Amino acid sequence: MKISFAEFRKSPYFFLKYFSMQMIVMIVLSLVVVLTLGLSLDFVPHLKSYHLLMLPFAFCFGIQVPVMLHNVVHHNIKPKWLNEIIGELCGFFVLFGMAPFRISHVLHHAYPDDHEKDPHAPQGRNFLHFLSITQLNSIKTIANKYYEFHGRSVKTYSIMGVQMACYYVGLVLRAYIWFKVLGPTLFVAFYIPAYLTNVIVFAHINFATHKTLPSGEVEIVNLNHNFYYKMVNFIGSGAYFHKNHHTNPNLYNPSLLKVEQAQYAAPRNRVRVTSSV
Image (cartoon, rainbow, N blue to C red; front, side, top):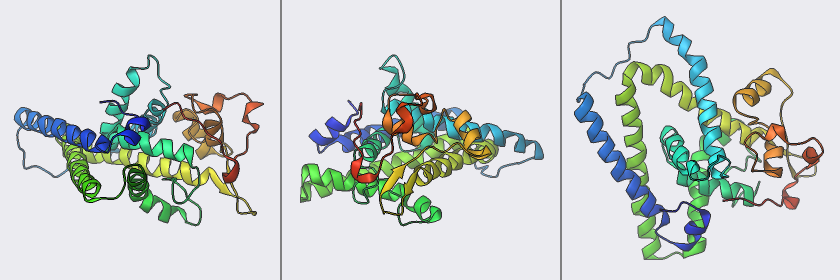
C-alpha cells in the first residue's frame, strides 16, 4: 500500500490496512522465529562486564537508525523506492513501523509548535514531562487529524478501535522477535540501550531546538555549542541542526546547509514549511 499523507487524508481505512497487514506479517515472523529457535523458557540475561563494551555501539545505533527513518520520510535516500524498504526496517527497530512516523512528522512540519496539531510541541513542559507524553501525544494528534478528515461516527470510532488493537499487537510482536533473535543477554545489553537512546535523544532534539522567546513566540534553533551536541551531530548526521532541517527538509545532513541559507529564524506564527511527502 502507498504510505503517504495524501492516502491518510483520502482513506479512513489507511491505518487499519497498514496496522492489520503489519500485524499479520509480525505473527508470521514470530511463528518462523519460534519454529527456528524454539520456545525457550530462559528469559534471564547473563550479563558480564564485557557487555559494557556494547554500550557505545548501542548509542550510535540508537541515533543513526531513527536518523535514517527521519530521512526516508522526506525521500532523501536515492533511488526513491529504497526509502520504503529502509523505512520499514527502521520502523521495525522503533517498534511501531514507518507509517505513523511519516504522518506525525508531516504534521510536525505543517504545524510546528501548535499544541493542538503538532505531535511534538514542547512549550510549557519540562523535559521529563515532554518525554513521558511524546508517544501518546503523537497518537492523539494523528487521531484528531483522522477525525477531522473522516468525521466522528460509529464507523470511524470502530475503525480507530480495531486499528489501535492491531497496532499494539504488532508492537509487542516486534519486541518479542527482537528478544528471540538476540536472546535475553543481547536484548538487554544492546537493544534496550539502543532503543532508549532513540527515545530520549530524539525527544530531546524536539524539546531543545524549539526555543520559547520572551515574546511568547517560538524559534526553531540549531544546537552545536558543546561536546554532547557536537557528538550527536557527528554520529547523527546533524540531528540537532533542526532550524536548518525546517529550512530545507531535503538535506540528509542539515548541518551542510549553506551559511547564508541558515539565517532563517522560525517564530511559530511565521513558519512556512513544505514537505516532500
